[in-house]
Structure formats: C-alpha cells, structure tokens
Image (cartoon, rainbow, N blue to C red; front, top):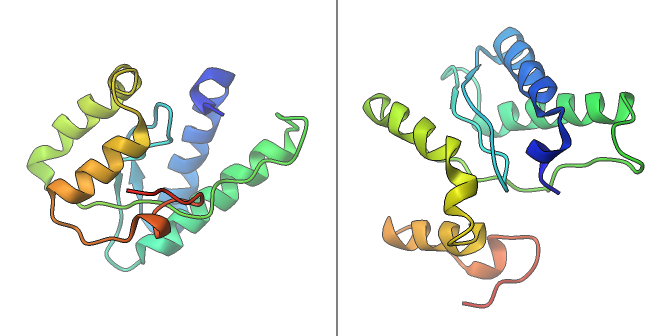
Length: 135
C-alpha cells in the first residue's frame, strides 16, 4: 500500500513532526514514495530504534483511530536507518522527493540491496526483509 496515494499522508507527516519534536527532539523533513522515507535529525540522547517506534506507534494509532482503512493498519516490523552528513541532506531530500520516479525503473528491494552492497554493508538477504529474498 502506498500511503502517499491515500490523500492523508500529510496528517501522518504532521503527526511525526509534532510527536517527534515534542517527545524525542527529532526534526522530520520529508516523506514520500513506494516506501515511507523520513529524513530526521534525531537528538543524540535517543536511540534511533526508540524514535522509529514512537513515530510508527503514533501514526498507526492515528490511522486506526480515524478509521482511515477498513482493517487495522500496522507498519512492517523492520526499518532501515542510515546516517548522512549535513552537507548531503539537501541532496537526499531531493532524491526522496523524486523516489517514486526512480522506483518506476528500479524497485525498492533491488535498490536497497544494491545500496548495501555498494557501501560494503555485510548482510544476509534472508534477514533484510520480512519475506525471504534469495540473492
């Protein structure tokens, strides 16, 4: 399901901004695409996993409380987090804003696995996604 196509992604983004800033000192910048991407400046006092859990929990609660879907909404269990230097943050935001266009040529799974390989991140593909990916 692509959240950007449902028309209420702006509400989730606003929720992330208010909840992240008030509870974790996190400033969010942008969401978009086949996957939900977030550029966040997380205060070093907080673990990335705790901040992601907060943002997912609050947005899931909002979606379900507002009955935006017929069934119950839940985010996938995992997430990817990458650090980017401040000097590259504008380039990253530009990339994310056009990610839907990029994903019409290369899907998210292939792009993600390629990115891990290109940056020499060791991984076992069967643990990267909920479904087993055979490389």
